[in-house]
Length: 157
Image (cartoon, rainbow, N blue to C red; front, side, top):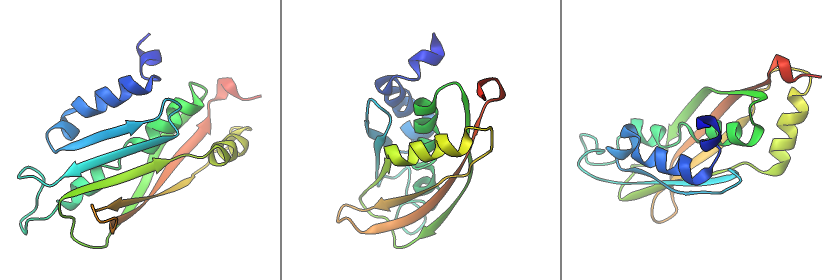
């Protein structure tokens, strides 16, 4: 029952928005599509998330992108797959001021590619770029997130 609830986008959005690491740092899930193919996250600059020089703390720019591709792929692929975050890197482009946003998209062609490459039980490490942008649309940080995806043994043909 509980696992089924996590496959509902509105439940996942609610839980993420009240999850303490997001709630207390001002990270908000603004949108999560019912099919888990798109999501949008924002964070406004506040006392709780600024660094010593008054701009967004870099660790929170990273954190606001952390669980999304893993959660979105888990929801789309279902119980027959193992999906984990494997690695990520971040390039801080410019200081983050005001509200920053990040958008996440998993196209059907990417999903089809993952299913094809894992059909025989092989692991696959798809890469997903993420751009954190300020209110003017300028890139504040660029991330490359790598996921680990493998079809579970019981689900292989």
